Length: 61
Image 1 (cartoon, rainbow, N blue to C red):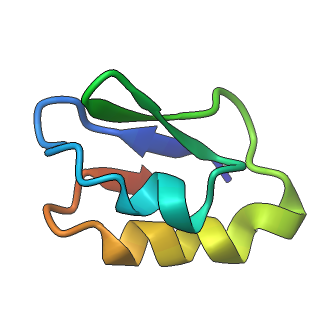
Image 2 (image 1 turned 30 degrees about the vertical axis):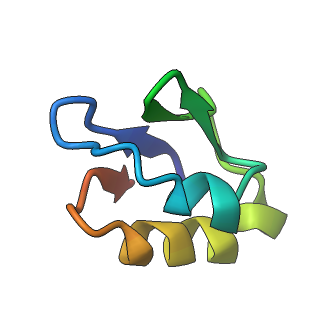
């Protein structure tokens, strides 16, 4: 599974980075996802971060 953050949608609320800092971080005012596959041990927290995004800027695939 990979994570992506749409920079055109992200409002920089920091929720994803707070929930799952192993996958999401802040780059200035916008969130970004680590490149590549999400480690299995972080998949549940990444999904929680995706669900918590108030503007649905995160996609997992």
